[in-house]
Structures are given as structure tokens and as C-alpha cells.
Image (cartoon, rainbow, N blue to C red; front, side):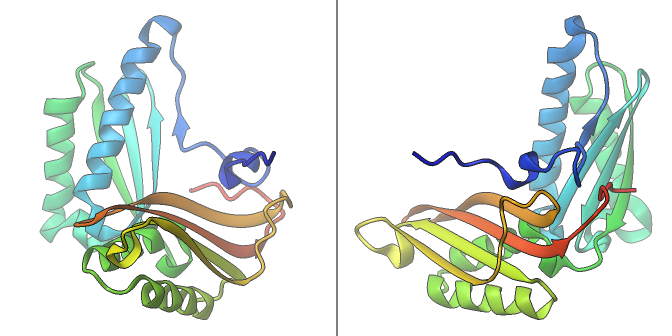
Length: 217
């Protein structure tokens, strides 16, 4: 029986590091974790169109610093920085019950086509517009390979194109070494919510080998 391991968790502390960086005593851990889950869910939904790649959370006793790595930073910052300021005020007033002050930093990712979460969001948007799934997969793979990836794999599962029987389709190009620890593999999974039901999406993008940790600075 196969044992599937998350590609990012498999390489944790080898070439990747954690997106949550804080310490808590056991008595407050559940409360702080619940706050972070709410914050992450809210930001993912709020900035869905901006192409969120990563959300890094750093906490101190009095402050939470949230770093958003996105493909379209203008949609997050807004006119004159008003967008990010409104989100910061909302988080401070509604979600942060512990009185911790929130600060938001926005970073632009260099190549959104090499980010699996961003690519997955584009695939989901196309499927929800009822574009044929095979065309979506082929166009996505062509775009990612053109951006400089060494390999890409896309897997869709569900009632594809509204078929009566759900099935699983896979399309890949190049190489994706999932066992090699120094392989820089961007991975993401999610859903496209169509009128025929939810379609599961998984995306792997292999960007080459790295020999040091790729921390978000």
C-alpha cells in the first residue's frame, strides 16, 4: 500500500521552513491557533483574486505580523494603501480577541506561474466558468513550462465536464522528483465548485534543485 506524503512537509527544515512562527504556553495555545486559522481563512477568501501564494504569520506577546506573498499586490494594498489598512482594522476589531495588534506586509512573488497555489486558483476559476477541463489542463501546463518550470503535473477528480460518473484525470510534462529532498516542488490542493458538484484539483510544479533553505524574507 502506498504512503503519500505532502511534498512540502517532506522537505520541512531541509529547504523549507514553517509559515507559522510563534511560541505559546499550553494554556493559550488553542486560543492562538484558533485565531490564526480564522485569520488565514479570512485572508484567503478576501484576496482570492490577488493570487495568494503564502501567508506567513509571526507572533510576539503584543503583535502579530502577517506577510502576504501574492501575485497581484495592487489588489491587496488598494488605492493609497487603503485596502490593507481596512483589513488590518477589521482583523484588530473582529477576529483578534486577545488584544494583539496586527501588522500586514505585502510581497510580490516574482513569477506567479511557478506558484502552485496561484496556478490552482486559475484552474478553479476556469473550471467554474465551464471551460472544458482538458483545455484548461493543457493551457495551464503550457503556461507553467513556458515560465521556466522543469516539470508540472495536474490532477482533476470529479464530475468533469458534467459527466454522470465521476473520474480522475491526470496530465503531466517534464520531471517531478518527489523523493529527492533538495527538489524545490511547489504543491497545492483545492476545489472548484461547479454546478455539477465540487472538482478536486492537485498541482505539482518542479522548479529545480536548491541547496539552501528558501525562507520568505
